[in-house]
Length: 121
Image: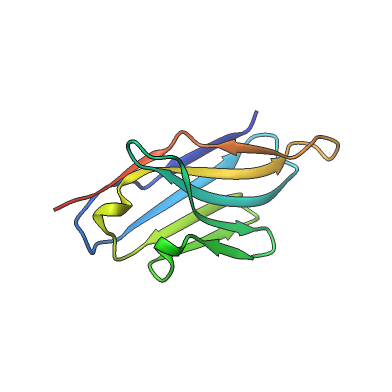
């Protein structure tokens, strides 16, 4: 059984920084894409950033220049360094991994439980 566990959320003042981490564990053959999404109250879940196993990165326009995604393929981890945080960044942040458990199984998208990030003075 695959599990994604996030850590690093919390309360931070505007302009501050936080680092989120996520580790995928369990039966994993290969992880194609890892990423972070967020969902603010009353809004739909939205893309924050994704990174492929080859290192190709995609950011939402709203976080470009402020957030940095990184990945360790050997450890099945993905991090999100968030700088210059704004109140609009307040949301529950979810880790995502698009992976295969076995060589013969389809690729599925797995989600973590989410970690709260609150940006407020």
